[in-house]
Length: 149
Image 1 (cartoon, rainbow, N blue to C red):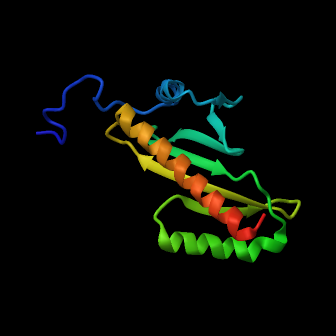
Image 2 (cartoon, helix red, strand yellow):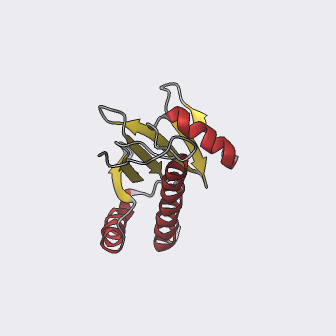
């Protein structure tokens, strides 16, 4: 007997994830989005850039990556590192990290990834996307406040 025996086909049925499944969900929410020249789905919320990527050998991972629109000077590096460490102590997601640019600026990212190996409903996908948008926005807002920018 399968894990989902008795599951019926229809609107609530599990289906493989794809970029093409996300686009109608975004349209239903009246969200503005773009597909870049590499075919990746992205959007901008509160000036922060988000990408919605389907990854993995079987395309079962929905990976949502956010990039903070602010790029503090390297002088803020220890503060940013400490803030990220404290965030991770208190919360499970999003995963947050930083990179230093060649120009000596700090780029801050958030990620949220879930494996949908068994497929997902539209409702599950929308929940993950809204969770990723909300938790990244909270992180970026709190970081901004902590830096007094």
